[in-house]
Length: 134
Image (cartoon, rainbow, N blue to C red):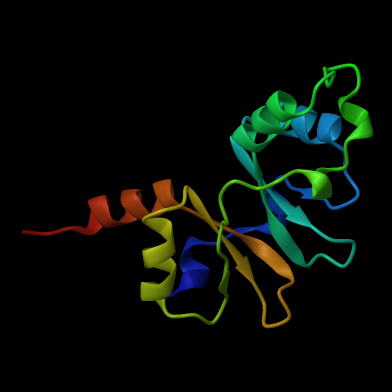
């Protein structure tokens, strides 16, 4: 068993780019029903993850910011309250499992940090639940 066995490829994953604004991020989160979403730069390199909480804290900390002016806020200016770590596609399964214990999903990248997809904690739990034998 390796990391590739759990991978949801980029083509099946919603993400935003570093050129997105706060309104676009919120719309994407709503459309895909995610609570957090990977951020990629223009070259497809994993930049980080933006969460619903990050958006809420930004609204709270910015006087006058409302839904009508969210398009003025670039997502790269929004403080990320949690650092979501990624793993390389060739990493040990144990490395990925250690991250999945603390994250709902683990971004997977190649050796150049180009985003390949995600591994969902839900899928890991389901796999191990199906395959546990007494």
